[in-house]
Image (cartoon, rainbow, N blue to C red; front, side, top):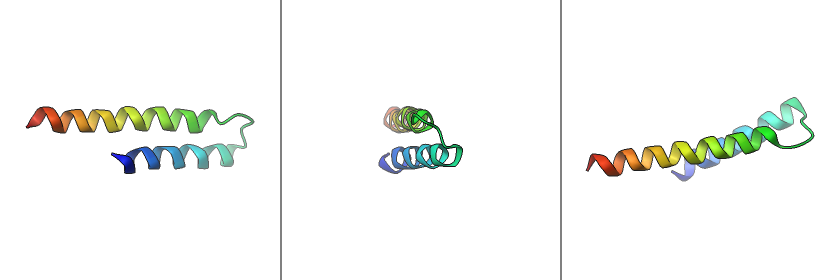
Length: 49
């Protein structure tokens, strides 16, 4: 779960640096997407048992 969030955050940060954005839009998108993905994976695993 933490790896998914770290990957989304670092991916967004890399994209912001690559596209040279003035505000870290892509980092925020990466954070939100990765948090929702981690919650989805955790809930999917929890409900399976």
